[in-house]
Amino acid sequence: MNELNQIKEPLVREDFVSPIIGVSFLLLFLLLVFISYSFRSYISKILLASISPKNLNENNISESNRNKKAGIWLTIFFLFVLTILVFNFLSFDSTYISFPKTAGGVFLSFGTVGLLFIIKYIIRKLIGKVFHQERLTDLSLRQLGAKDKVYGLILFPFLILYNFSLPLKEISLMIIVSISCFYLLLRCKNGFLLGIKGGNIPYFYSFLYICTLEILPVALVIKVFSDPILSILTQ
Image (cartoon, rainbow, N blue to C red; front, side):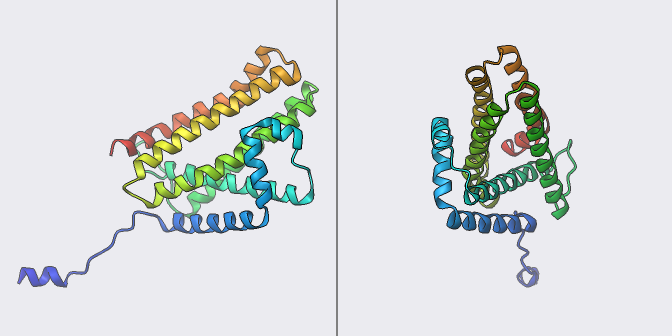
């Protein structure tokens, strides 16, 4: 009799992926398809420019309306990738962080990422005007923008593995952390060397600039995300 009751009991399938994450990845994938189809040549130029900033300086990726649109779309893609990354870590069960695992959490993550992106952009522009280095600031923004776009393109497939493949969850997380650390290191290196070589800016001011706009945000990110990351790796 007990066996019959067990047979009649319906099997409940537990999804390990939140529906909002599934919808977000679907929209992000469609956005990537649109960008790849419409701006294929721009993507290849950005990839070359990220490998060698010299290519960016020489070609300057002509500021045509088409390239401007491509740059905007890829920047949006980068911000959405960061949004999913932030949402993944903040929505993880933690004793230190309470974060909504709903559409509201995704919008909150996107708002935070977008706001920080705009604030850093404005600060860079202001620093360029204060030190009369507008040309150097524009060059720095182009180089960092190329790295941002490539970072988003590279990170996206590993975020898919992290969210949709339980056996590869831990290894994909380690790859994501490694790529992110390398990306942040390149940003620091780019800002420091460009300030020294391109603008004859003293070491102290270059170091202060890196600490304010790169190292301080990274320290804050480590403070917030260290607990969720360690919790995932120790499961």
